[in-house]
Length: 430
Ligand SMILES: [Zn+2]
Image (cartoon, rainbow, N blue to C red):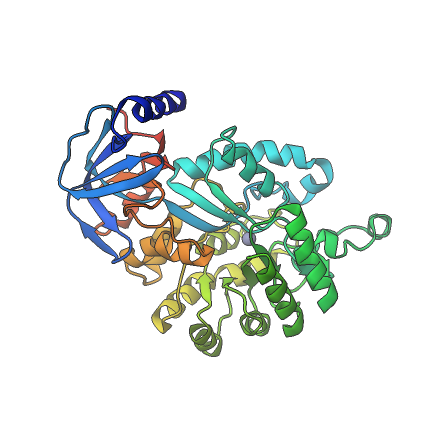
């Protein structure tokens, strides 16, 4: 199929006028993510992986172009999930698998996860932690694996014993054998370490920096709330990241660590569980984004009910933290904090990412705002302006679904057309 498309592109370049289109998507409705409004029938002309024109009504395909009939569907820009872990999917075995499996095993799993994510309508993701993601990104870009466009953090940056210290929970013999991970392994304890850790991520091929500003739920450690970086350490990370054109995402549950991350200049707060009114005001002043990941909160609170699913050190954190995130997201929206879309998939099952839209609406956000969170807001968080809207000159990342998600948000679960960079990965059976 891709080869046929490629052949069509070459043919059109040789034999047809330069203006020839590759495909014309005839959409029944088109969600305009810039204004947050639903428009009527529109046709999207796609050429060389980009949107060439967006025309009102149903436009017939010109010679050499393929018409794609989506007249009974709603089209919109492909979604971005700003918080995934492509190489993981939590289960009762997660805590022992790290000792039994190699990165190669996780990489093979990631191939399937990436495909599920793309086919669910997510044409881009930001992978916030994991050493497989930069390699998966390259394999996807080279056309060897089907998946979303990936912005990869590589190994998250933590502090000793903190969330994402990879040696948490190891016995003393193993800990001594391995030694402290240090900045190369993503664990810092000073401003100098902070700079080294960012430079190492650059060397490793990261696209974005992730820090764990407070404890976390699933790490083998007692606290999910404790602050784990000084403001100076966060500032050193953010400043060094700027040298490489990187933005910084901060995982945070507790208020103090969240505040330090915002003061240190991070681009986004992830989870944000115990976000106070004061922190919300600070985020508004500083233009800090909030990526709630309600899905993960609900998922861990639910699994904590099952005896033995989590180690006993994790279970109370999952119960307490997990249950709060959705309400925090609702309060933050009301307070006017800018919200972008993320699920923390890898905690939950890849491919179910769109369920987050339903949770956002349940939390009090309008459906249109939730859709903007995964499109135009997400592009802002990534710092790009060539995606997240269906407009001439932008990437042809376009999805479609039956129904109207502004009238019934559950329509987002029925995506059956996915185009990324002008190539079709999924289309309705006709
Ligand atoms: Zn995460």
